[in-house]
Image (tube, rainbow, N blue to C red; front, side):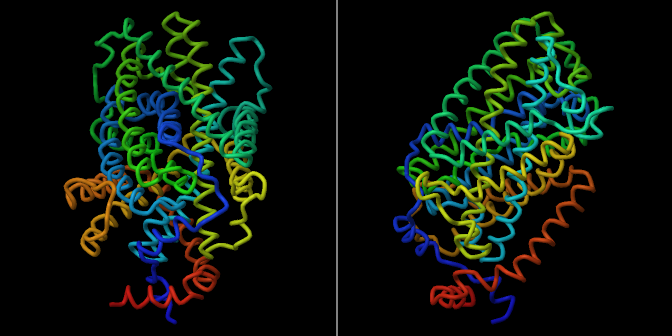
Length: 478
């Protein structure tokens, strides 16, 4: 069997739908609001509490709100496509599974391999932001950490290792490796705190906004806005993470599409409001700190608000780490269950009913990355992979509508192919705004993935050893 034929084989949507009820091991314990909380947990966090200030200070100025708007348009188009797929194929794996079903095994592999790195590094970015807020509180209390433990090597003189970021990464990993019910309840509680904190930022800061601080509105020009949008893009997705938990949802075909759209809508409203408030209460040039919201409220003489927001921010950012590690572990689990990675990773814990092996390994990678690398380098690396996955998912919706219009879809993306084209177009535009070094790093990761697929995945794929694989090859060749 040729390599090209191997790469294009796929399992039909009907076969995946049939298997949905047959798969076992993971417990169906998540309802609509728990799924929405996972989505909000993934979306709201580092964008509000960390990157809003960094991007405003270094790339977009007060026009950071436009950066979020651009990123939100691309994310919204992709969200509609995810909503259709999540109801149509309610199986763990999210973008990997959708790409596998529509575009073939190799396309699915590329997306899955891509997202393995993305989710781990996004969790690492957020862990670094979490560390910044913890250290701000410790400094305010007069008990600063030793300089060597305050950040990654090179982030400031004397720093060697970001100890708080490593600690929180490992703690969330341990929670996720245990029962999903415990993790879901924990996540829902801290998401509620996070929403309250975001609303508190807007209410407390509104009276201190000075419109003259918004001038010049676009000090870095249009290119700065686009570059800022590319950097903050991963702060306006997260709904894709909830779709990785499809096999742990009680009513996936009904609740997954709703949760996708609910989580993105709520998050975007809060982002726009906070961008305007934060750049209106202090000069945007002062916001390039690890904890910009806390610093801004401290600068306007509201230290009590600063402490309250820092505490809520710590809780809220924790949920982002939770969502990314959950999603990454389930992508890895799905890849291994399909034979593209060793089956050892796909074992479910007999007592906890979680993919504990992938969770623990991904958590270890996240802890190492958050301890050793600065925030800005991690943030630049993760976005190109997620944007690439969005391009594939938007294209796949249009392809499947053309190929299989008869399939029953609990949710239908409106205005196909216009909405998918918007998603693809904006994602390509945002990729264009990323630094050149990001392309090189991403290319190296994809090349490594190609070697793994050619050397292992294509030979051990479940489709390659089954009659279903033969049927899928014939279908894709016809």
